[in-house]
Length: 419
Image (cartoon, rainbow, N blue to C red; front, side, top):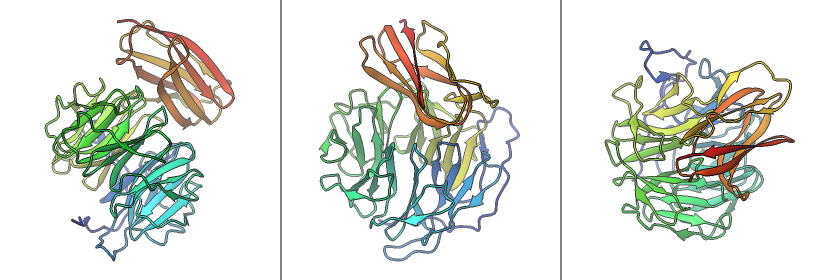
């Protein structure tokens, strides 16, 4: 069945306003009605607008808009777009933007959306995941399967053995790629997309769509009718984790760098957060209009703010929701990695670090024999002092090591999990 999106209204830049209640979590940032979100490593936020369409025709959408000031103002970024009906939007950790549009056109921008170039692939890309310059995208609308690019979206190859109707993609820290489908559950590729195997042990509902991986390496998939399922063993088995959710219909999933999981629940359930890997969920709706709580996209900025698309409206969290927080804007004179605190800890600890210049940053955790066990942060951040929280609930008591790599700077420190 083809679902027609609501008619697009004329976009007029709107200043964000804080809601009156200081206890509110969210503030409204755009008029109706963007459908898709992307966040750049520098913290720019992009929204994509989807117009009306049928199988073989479309009415124009408004294209792509960008904010560089957390939603205070917006700029139209359509130069080079020959189709403005956006059906998918993604930004890699290296800053490459990919836009999927209706009628099988795909566009790419390497300058924060200032100029778009159509790339030579025929597909309707709606779902994405990436690691560095390798991007996976799926055409779930026409069920053409999964495509892969190894050159930041300049060229694409269709993965012939991939699941045909993939409605969600994610990459784990081990390099495994997962695809969620609407009819046959979850598939896994352990060879970077060349071959795919169904991994559905424990799934009781195979109508899957959003799928994400958190910093602990756990995988979460949302279903229609079965709620959220979690895998702690790279897809080997799944278990339901729905305690606190008012509905078993999941429209969106998101994560932050603290490992927290966010779930959009419909109809009109809004957004829920789990700080313990899905064991329990709490509602996070304060500030969202009651009548428009169908969350369709959840993304985090490098500064720790969460952005959500809700029934055609876009909201930003008023404050960072834990995650990576920029503590000071003054430029430090050198790289620095602080000792985590508290230490020993159970299960949460905080790590601080400083960057004298914009850098690609990774913060990883290793066990006592040097095996990587978690990725706390993998992003590009501007110069400044930062604080990030890590939840070590899945890990046994013992000594671990955390390593910060930022450009050529590398430093390692010891932490202790104490149960």
